[in-house]
Image (cartoon, rainbow, N blue to C red; front, top):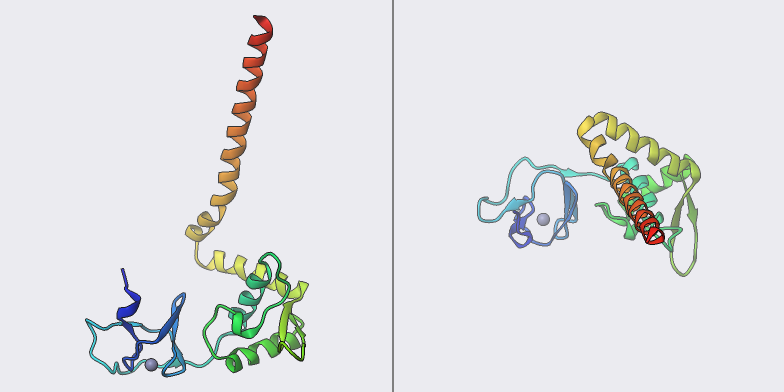
Length: 175
Ligand SMILES: [Zn+2]
């Protein structure tokens, strides 16, 4: 298991934030996909690791929709999104998504820009998820059906309890 305090960016900085498979170094102000590197096994600086330039549109749209799907949520600020990149790096894909009608900008003088996914944006994320399941093969698809099968098990259990209750009730009347 990786201990966070041992991890460094390619330059050897320790102030990093991990996001899924990528991470951000607060000292370099950059996002990397390769690494982070274990301080006990690495000689710094590590050569040949290029920082990622910006978050992809798909990534940003997915993050906006997933945040706005939370209870009591209808819009999101760029700084709240769970993706790497500075606000300006995320701002550009957000504007592009806005131009495509996938998110809507809610301007508020005192609290900054907020972004809300449109129905088309939500639909796009559903389609992207479907493509991802397809690309990643049956393993991922199986992982996604685990919740419905749990519900199925629960239904069977409730059914058994009802049948048992009915049987006991019938016996009680018989006595
Ligand atoms: Zn760094």
